[in-house]
Image (cartoon, rainbow, N blue to C red; front, side, top):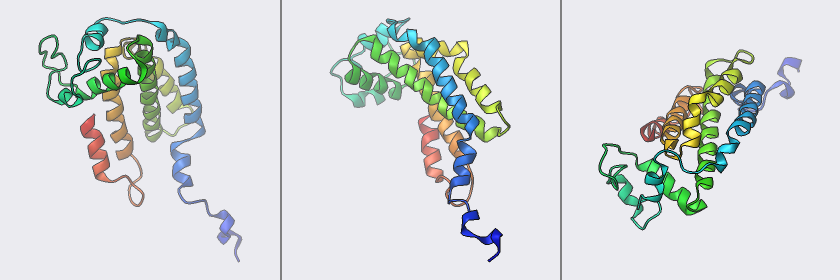
Length: 198
């Protein structure tokens, strides 16, 4: 048998895709971004409420009160303070679940915001890897994205998680849609649902 046809020369099914998406540079970039981000943003976990966090969380019956969860889809984001024309049911529900899980103290909300930002960084890294497979370019961009000063708003300001949720639910369909076509590609409805939620 020709050496070029031996079974040992055939890569495992799907290994090429995994290597292409999860390159060593991207993995290093994600770890570096996460470590440096925690170093700089970690102190925010001890911060209290910022800006209108009290009105958004403590004074919102949908977050800490007894209002049914489904009403988040039927009311304005600022329904308890007068309608402002903002419709953000997923943000309200995330605050509600956060309150149920970690209690009313700011620490749990800040931890959720930081974890959410890390998820955004992860999916941004996957997208950067799709766009550029050249050396260290993707993970350098990833670190810059993770640590840009504008990101302090989505970490420190609890109500600012609306931007992180929007970014996450926008990045997911972009990454899925930019993947390989053909067999093994994500179904169109999965991409459509993710984009719709975003």
